[in-house]
Length: 300
Image 1 (cartoon, rainbow, N blue to C red):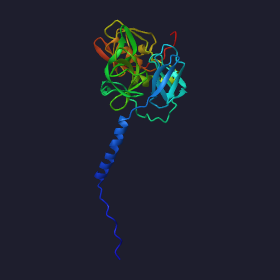
Image 2 (tube, rainbow, N blue to C red):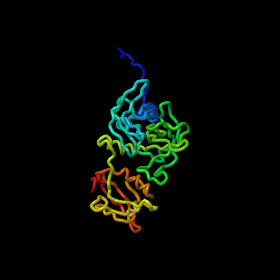
Image 3 (cartoon, helix red, strand yellow):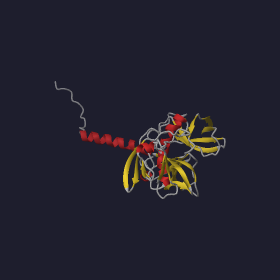
Image 4 (cartoon, rainbow, N blue to C red):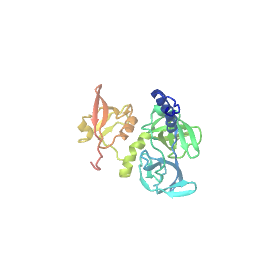
């Protein structure tokens, strides 16, 4: 007896199988790439000021911006008429970033944060507001306002509509968070905190409730056209690394330092206990130097 016949099956070559897998995967990848973060609406007290919050890079916390002059006493999460007081974790007075325990750990925000804000990520910027995305444009880096040198560089953004509230996340064309709105500047422009500052601040605020600055033990001339070192304190990390008075700081970490405000911004990102690569100019010679900042002891 002849064996029962089997239904014909299409023959799929390995190449066709791989092609189908790729075709099915690409839409999923595109969906993840363009997904937008979900901001939470906050009310900051005691001034009853509106703010936006977003889950932190590790998803354990909410991060927002508090621009009020008074001490932050509490923050209320407003969700469809419900009001929930958030558990306060810590606030950094320098950047105005504040952190709270995340009441919604189920929120999918994985891989939504960029590593840094640079010119390559400044195309197609959008602020994700409660009512939808608002297009904005990168204008320039702000290192000082008038004669005042800022403790870190801020991003200047121009908005097509009303400037969003503090803490509003700004994403690039891939949906990655690259900044948080700080406050209005003038006209339709606003200052924003770059994402690298949020990465820098979060660990310190969570562990110490404040930013812990890295101390090198140098003084620079504020009136010089270049960041020239005018004093190296005895026993400081700078002295131990071989830095001398009259050296000019050309680079600190990943940041070029052409002017004094550039140097202030670069040194903001140095962290105690972590070696930082510097480049200095000494008698027309460029020298690489590694220095490990410490936490400065008060009174020493």
